[in-house]
Image (cartoon, rainbow, N blue to C red; front, side):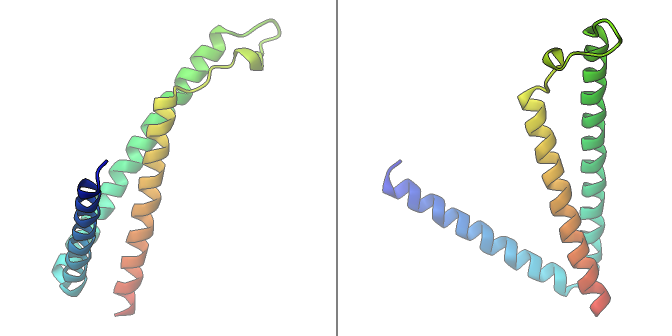
Length: 117
């Protein structure tokens, strides 16, 4: 990577952060925009939570069906044959969890600032 592209990348990141900050400031100052943003973030959080839950249920269901098919005598699956989750699925699940945490934190901050007014 040459110095120009690195500088352009840093400059672009700065502009994005500055634009996001300005947009957030405008949103917080306008009660109608603030309520709309909170509602939108809440809906996104709910959707993300549902996706994560569905993905987790699917993952657990796959593990249970794989575990049932690899059970040895005595009805217990050996730990050596227990399936591990696909690394891509684990990564997606982790990303969804992080998004949920971020959205909930942001929503809680906005609710607190709203109640203080």
